[in-house]
Image (cartoon, rainbow, N blue to C red):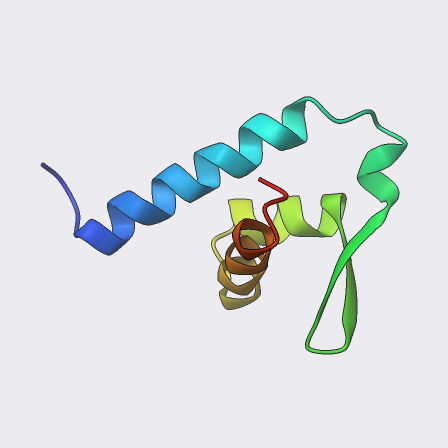
Length: 70
């Protein structure tokens, strides 16, 4: 197996997000879904942060899973 368990888990979470995101309408992707660090996060912002694997993207993924949105 390649990568650490955390990297493998992160890929599964990212895949879950991408699967949900790909099924959203373009209009829905503009909607705010979370507030993280006092910043409104839309599906589009979440996509950019998660795909680029930023620290904010990690927080967003955690929150989306916690809230059972993905």
